[in-house]
Amino acid sequence: MATHRTEHRAKIAEARNVLGEVISRARYADEPTILINRGKEAAVIVSHPFYEQALRDRALIEALEQRAEEPAPEAKADAKNKARVLREALDMAARTVVDAVRHTD
Image (cartoon, rainbow, N blue to C red):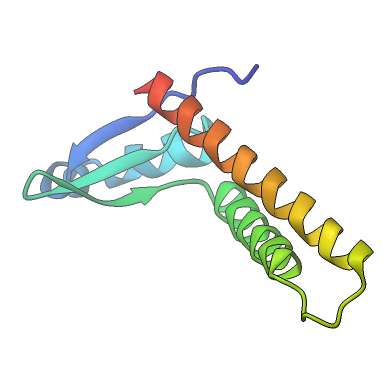
């Protein structure tokens, strides 16, 4: 089970006044800061390693989704079955992540 990640929220103007502190929290404590603009979440300041991992995760998910696309009608039954199983696994993982995020809010 994942531990609860500390995250901060700040209006952009407020964060600008303490930008060094916001960056230090992201860099050294791995604590993101969500920037608020006109009452809406606008951006997040995270550590560079977190950002790099997010890019790798996104690329991996996109590659898996591409492999899970419906194979051509002439594809072998085994390929169709593997694609179906992968789609189901991706859907289940997505639901699990959404549920986990809802329970931490």
